Length: 136
Image (cartoon, rainbow, N blue to C red; front, side, top):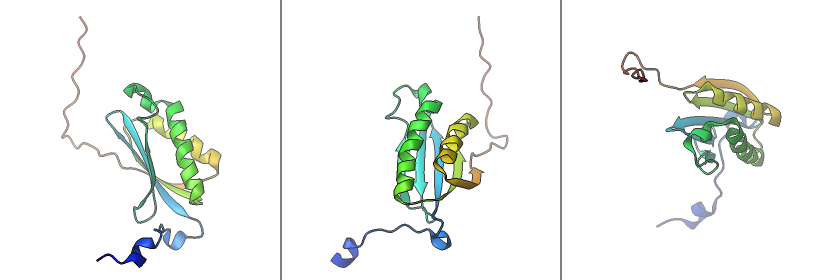
């Protein structure tokens, strides 16, 4: 049986020893021309997540700077709701042009980004290069 006392307790996020500063992590993933932004606490519990798909139907336009700006506005509302001051940034994107609007939005909101890490897997001679396009 499920104890009713345990189910009524609201879930609290873990900010650990950084509770006074409220440190959270922002994960940016890119898969098949779509961007995924996820905000987590220090244990990995998701505080908020959003994708670029509802903002642009065209796949090529999902990585445009104005779409990224709209996504960041939504995420900044989540960060303000949880009173987060510091963001750790984890990138898993192939194009580094995505990073510029993200940094601009984070700096404009007053959040500090002391830690950024690129998690993109590097092929160690295991991927075949793309064919050269032939124009006739």
